[in-house]
Length: 298
Image (cartoon, rainbow, N blue to C red; front, side, top):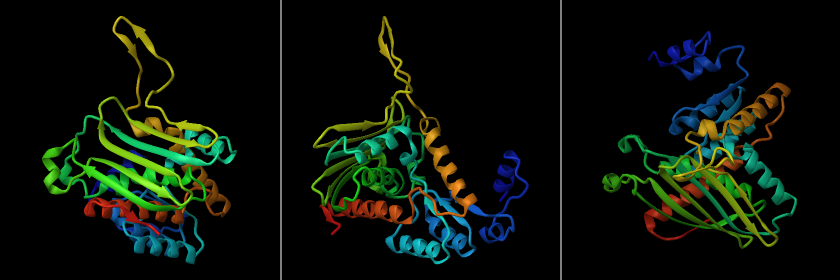
């Protein structure tokens, strides 16, 4: 009960609330950032929209397509800005990669790849991690990235495999910490997304698009291009936290949202439809793993 007040004190904020309705009733409130556990996102978003507030929602926006549609409809009904936290779009390397694709430098995309390897050691309690988190909250970033890097293409088939390789002792409880996904698109391209919860060497986020005219790669586990050469060989310093790796992306996405709120405009960042599209792939992955078969999205 005192967590909100404690955080408010730490951040030097005058007010704290334990009820969403009380917060939304504040007369000076123009916008909200929804960063609750994922299962609460949709209901809080709908409440915020009905209160006429601009909305920035952490991914996933919803856990079902029905809730995604409900969230989109709520924001659209009152014409409030709705932006979803797919921060890789704002990372400099990824945004430059998309620009190269838009400029035709890669040609027609043929093979795409996106990966998320969280830094080890893995210290979380698997029993406290909701089932299918690897798809709903981890790989959903990769799904959005692959959709964004393959403009105008629509996914038509998904095949996913997942296992507990980091914590095999939780395999029989339905926990997954490792997954590989193959996505076929209607333009003929094929994408692969992979995730693992324990990369002992650092925080590894990368993307790649190979096309008829070239290739673009994005992301690097290394903090910089500096390499140390000594008697033991070569050494690179690697990223260890998302808040370090994506500090520019996190800052840029929120700055864009704030600009839109101040100007009374819709946001330029990923919105409800983008969140729904990524969620559709995540749900197809869950079905694919459960059935051990590909799933059609047609």
